[in-house]
Amino acid sequence: MQIENVKPMSKAFSSGVDAGSREEGASEQKSRVSFRFDRNGNGSSIWSCLRGKAAALRRDSRGTAATEFAIIVPLMLVMLFGTIEVSSGVAVNRKVTLVARTLSDLTSQSRGVNDADVTNFLAASYGIMWPYPSGPVQATISELYIDPATSVARVQWSKGKAPRGTGSTVGIPSGLIARDSSGKVLPNQYLIFSEVSYLYKPILGYVMSKAGITLSDATYTRPRKFSCVTYPTPPSGNFPPCPTN
Image 1 (spheres, one colour):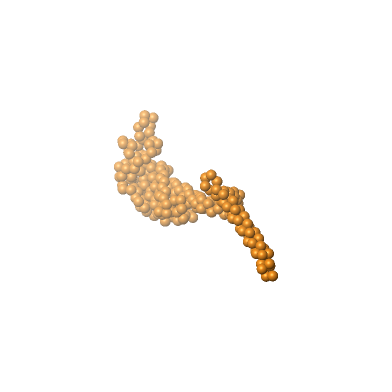
Image 2: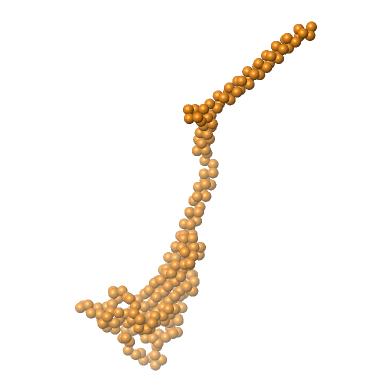
């Protein structure tokens, strides 16, 4: 009685094992199919997955604005600070030119000058630099005599931060030398010569050198009230003839 019941159970167990084996074999076959290799030896499924990821990455625009911002901001900051520094430098250079012209013009209007006059002329000229500091200004005012025999300009007197030596020569544009119709240099020619330099140091130094840039200009003006401007002013008020040496 017990032996007869064993056979059906054995068959049922055998059929269950066969069914499980078939499912496991189908799963392994499916796994093997999913990892087929193409002719180049690459897994076709993996390659398709990578291509899909790459295509999705190309379509994904998240973070684009942040990336562009990170690239553009440094360039924009350099342009901004560079514009500020260059604009300030141009403004200072313009004021240096105005200082040179003012100093020469004030001096040329005098018949004679002394140390106090020169100090006042320099102070009035330095005021033009506002709102920029006037400390870096280096200004010198000189009178030049043009020798009619040689057309060479020589210093008669010089005052300021870097005064020139009396009798030293200064190169001047040939257009400032007056000549007659025959081309001969006219006598009694004097020039008031102002020189101004300024060490401009940028605030940030992103574009320009932090050490600074020296800006300079010079102006020539003919005396207005007389042939020359005498230094120093005679206490008696009697001006001597203009020097010619």
